[in-house]
Length: 393
Ligand SMILES: Nc1nc2c(ncn2[C@@H]2O[C@H](COP(=O)(O)OP(=O)(O)OP(=O)(O)O)[C@@H](O)[C@H]2O)c(=O)[nH]1
Image 1 (cartoon, rainbow, N blue to C red):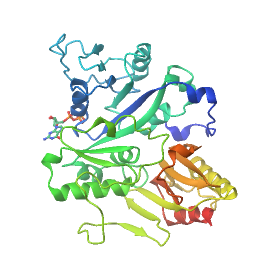
Image 2: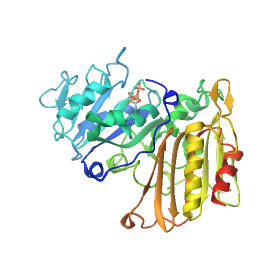
Image 3: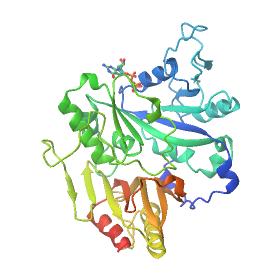
Image 4: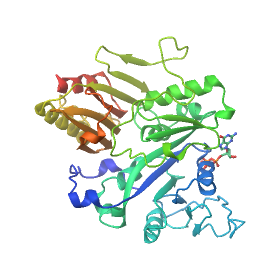
């Protein structure tokens, strides 16, 4: 799959009224660390009675050369051995299992011919570690959206993390050398929900320290502790992560709230504005409070985002800072909510695409006037934080 950074600068997307009314099938991407429990989660979804009609695509996506055939034996009364699950298999619980030896795009095209037989698509990205390019494809890719993709809407990205080995996997990620961002870190950064799975095998200290690390990388996405992927599907499906404001941060299941009394490390700096900055192995996250904005400040914020997301530089810098051939400032994911002239807005971004939409008053209950902007990526140091804060001054 082509590197998104090599593509031309995209246009900010405008949505027509007709497009807004078009009924889409939501799609959820599942990524996760090796052996973390992705297949176990999918098998559970395919075999349990949950009342959802879900189509699951189990395949390596986007790689037509060497497609991994994923052996999940899904049995049903008609097919006790799961022998025919390599094509389409309609299961007793209403799920549609789609495990075809074909490119992911073709699989989805075939699936969409059965539109109406299911109401949600789950896509497992087995061999493809970084969910970002796939999320970009389903989210506002004009070329894709003019084909069968126009019937699909990206609902969210889920990352399954091994509670026992996840921290070690992140710390040993060899590609996180300061220039390239490690794959496991990209998965955490690009996800909207994180399942900390296999908690039955981990010690309380392992759970806390792994959650702590995940939160440093991605401070906005909820973390749920699971055993064999057991979780109410309402936390995974229908979350509208790309249209709704980021959820208020809840403590992970298990209830660990970070305080000054914590025994484990918090490599974070906080200032009086409520901004926080975390950094680990080449990837960092930046969270900046956003006061109610005037129209002029909003325009400045839009300009700032274009500079950072499209040109990999803050406006104060005249050229893109480069480290060993790669931009030293790169944003993988951004989210935000803020008020402009009394109207709530939501910012969503995947790599260098972003979208700012207005919320109507029915959606703004409980959302505070003081908003926030969260960026996750590389090179998000104090100069970036100060530059963003200047926009609000
Ligand atoms: N004890 C325990 N074992 C689990 C849990 N979840 C999954 N497993 C086991 O862990 C192993 C790996 O699980 P999979 O679901 O195959 O993991 P995966 O992420 O699909 O693996 P890859 O596709 O190879 O990356 C299997 O033997 C599962 O039975 C859990 O919560 N607790």
